[in-house]
Structures are given as structure tokens and as C-alpha cells.
Image 1 (spheres, one colour):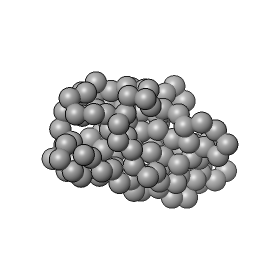
Image 2 (cartoon, rainbow, N blue to C red; image 1 turned 135 degrees about the vertical axis):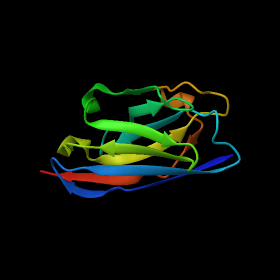
Image 3 (cartoon, one colour; image 1 turned 90 degrees about the horizontal axis):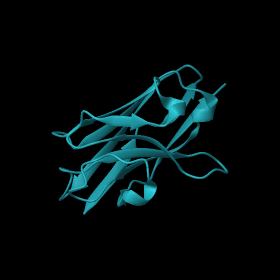
Length: 126
């Protein structure tokens, strides 16, 4: 079982930066790929970024490439999403997700993630 708790969201002006954190607790964190997703008001939840286990390989949705960076600190059992040059269209609830134990390859597909956090709100003002 894995519990995920996101933090770091908030209100920021366009062009600003935020770093989201996702702390994992429970029996399994190793050998697990992680991802970040987001859901804007009135829209479906969408893929943002994913990172493999133990790290070193990541992928992003086109709209955030060059602005967002996903990383992980396995010793701290934490995954990060560094968000720079934020835009109003980045406003959403951001969710951290983990694949099941043994699934080390990142994925952009929500159905391939077994554990989800409660989400953290990011609001970017223009």
C-alpha cells in the first residue's frame, strides 16, 4: 500500500514558479514509476509528467515541455514537479500518482496508475 500526499500548491502570478512535492509513505515506493496529472475546472484530468524508477528518464505533455521538470529523491520517498514560467492555463488541481510495485517505466496513461494523492491546487493569475 502506498499513500501519497501532495504539497506546494498556491497562488502565483503568470511567469512565476512553484515546486510541488509528493511524499510517499507505506510499504512500497521502490521500483515504482511516478507521474503528475492535473485537472482544470470543467475539464478532464490530463497527463503532465512521468518519471521512471529509479529516475533518469522522464516525459512531458507538450504544453509544459521546457517549463516543468519532474524529479525524484528516492531516499526521501518524494517526487517533485518544478514549474517555471507559469501561465494562467496551468491553473488546475495537480495530482501525484504511483504505478503498482514492479512497474518501473513511466506512463502518460491514467489507467496505469494504481495510487493517487488528494491533489493540490495551483492557481496562476494573469
